[in-house]
Length: 139
Ligand SMILES: Nc1nc2c([nH]c(=O)n2[C@@H]2O[C@H](COP(=O)(O)OP(=O)(O)OP(=O)(O)O)[C@@H](O)[C@H]2O)c(=O)[nH]1
Ligand SMILES: [Mg+2]
Image (cartoon, rainbow, N blue to C red):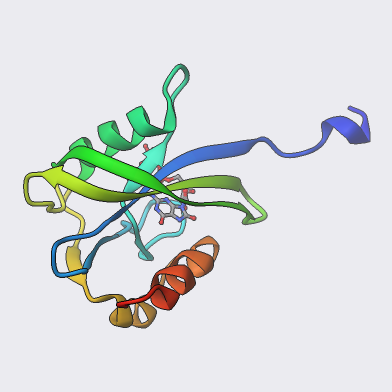
């Protein structure tokens, strides 16, 4: 294979920053046999063939935390190379939803005040997300 073809394929991931009326953010803990095991994350998952990011986000948040997304807005996009895996995180702020999120796959989960997010161990790629949330007015 030529050098030009050796670039790793990036996995596109739809990620939801779910915010409640108190300005808290909903986070989940990854399980011990997943990539980035035991780290805390913003719920979401891989975009499947034929899906838009918004469709993937709605499906993943229904499956993983049991909410119906009513409104979301672009938040940021992050490219990160873990060495074993290259990911593109397409992050949306979920501003309106139906239901109360919980860890439907048995994963620990909780609402956290923005200023407390820094106390959690997130995957390396998530650094800029936590920084942007923390820097926003009202955080
Ligand atoms: N959901 C989510 N994934 C993240 C975050 N940060 C981050 O680096 N990732 C990476 O994105 C990749 C895909 O996410 P995922 O494992 O949730 O995908 P999925 O729900 O489709 O899972 P599956 O493979 O168990 O079916 C993983 O390699 C994960 O480590 C994050 O905040 N949330
Ligand atoms: Mg997932």
